[in-house]
View 1: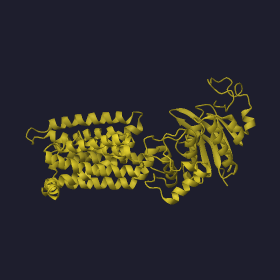
View 2: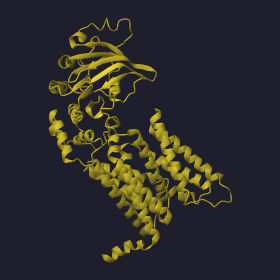
View 3: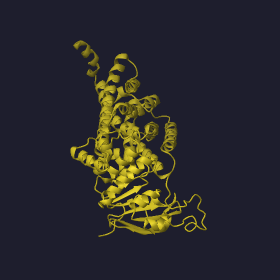
View 4: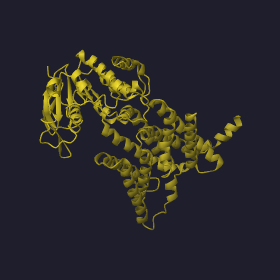
Length: 277
Length: 249
């Protein structure tokens, strides 16, 4: 038994696996906590849209001459700005949030393609596939630092404003009457989503990052009775699923990000079945 | 002591339309007044202006001697549309405690729970304390929201068509409850209603609002006037009630 455990955990001897585990777990916890609010507010599409906006931000960073690892410093403010733009349109016009997201996400993705094409022919080639599908096993020590810092910041802010944000999620008008700064908290929620999505794109890629935000929270919502229980369960499921998926993909020699998402998806289906019976 | 509510020339413009035009009336402390009038007559808008949710273009509304929104914790509000998110994992105690705390309780503390229980006790809803919000009947939901409005011991209660969407029995029970609470004079109340029986039973005074204040007085004075011919004469007001506060049934 002990030999089996040792064999399963053997990959941890390698630095890149330890970094991948740290990055995945930190991102998983922050995304799951955030996801509770995103799912309750029906904003699942938003994280997907912001992931595509992140592609635009990373491409802009590359165009400005940043190395692949440093382009995130352009993508972070770029994507936060897009998120605030979406929220502005949501609040100031009668267009729905999905329409605002649709417009901003297509435009920034198109801009990203344009930015990549505008780079000089002498600059280093870009691995677009890496951008689209992420590379958890290739997280550098510097990227790990950024991911841990963003995850810690997002979790701390959510624990701080979570009860008021939850009240505003339940009923914005009653929350406003109780003195909750509803509009400001909504802008904050979108900015936090942008931060999580950008570091998520670095690890699981543009296509899969929204699953990190949505699936654990959706699973927990199916089985949890109170908001506190749902939040705790979402974080536990996300962290466990990420760790399991990482080790499974290593031993099976398959794509890491996809294995993690499939693990989270399996948990969702299990919850769906358990809830019915 | 300032009155519970005093409107002076209150005017609200939304999208270029004067929804409230020069509205003036007063509600004394401990008094229950009814707000009647046709749909679109500005009743809900008036409550929202008094709560500070809708800005005034002119005039003023004084709530417990302060600006709208300034005395928020002393004002209880029972909204017409319970626009809560049905997917939200809300329980009755959470909803009531949220109004006490100004934040959603991740864990309900004992003191808050007892306050919620006491508020529910006043409306005869104590057994509902731990019930999930979804699955409550319309009448039960009204009681919970009334308990929510009462939990901070308000000096003024604003109720927006509290019996809309509730069946006849639930409506009668709710009005009994409200009559019992109002008779104690612990709070003043403004009740928006289309229910003439409720007005006759509960109100000391009625304001008939149709953009402007068309009438303001004792229920007998306002209700028994012939609105079909006098108040709406010469005006195109399709669907205007023959009586200012018609029964819903």
